[in-house]
Length: 171
Image 1: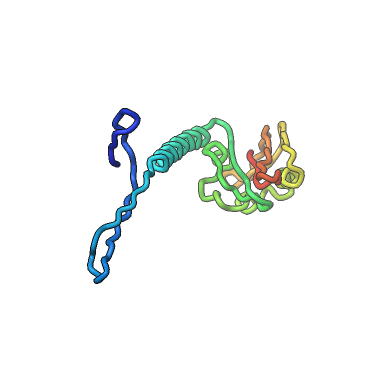
Image 2 (image 1 turned 45 degrees about the horizontal axis):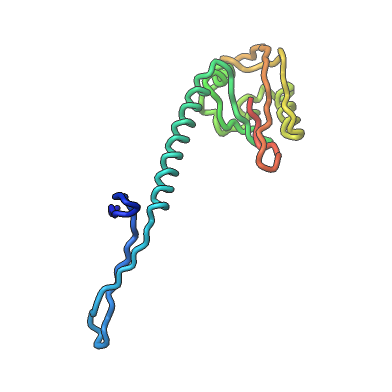
């Protein structure tokens, strides 16, 4: 940073300097070559980018916190194995599971879902890219070493990539 007087005022200006010795004919240092270029715009752009990234990180942190403590189940399943990418506290509570299920296939952590409609519905949403709205869907989940009947209202919302292909499903 080097303040200079221009445009009738003192401005803070950023510079990049390059210094090299210049040799005379006998090979001795005869002078110094100094090349400088102003980098103020680049420095300001970098500062703006850093501020934007910090704001995005803060916003993401707030959203994660809000979703994690939401009073409804929220989970993300990825790929046709329906890997549990994330699940909030309410989803884990309703499933009777802990955070150890994150990163594992849904059918692996809840094998009792095989033969029930949920995995088939997830596959249909992956195949078609059309959301599924479940209303009072009956199911069985293993809770404390025994199967418990439940009825659920839920949405399987496809999450698509930039080409419109479903990559994951938000519940």
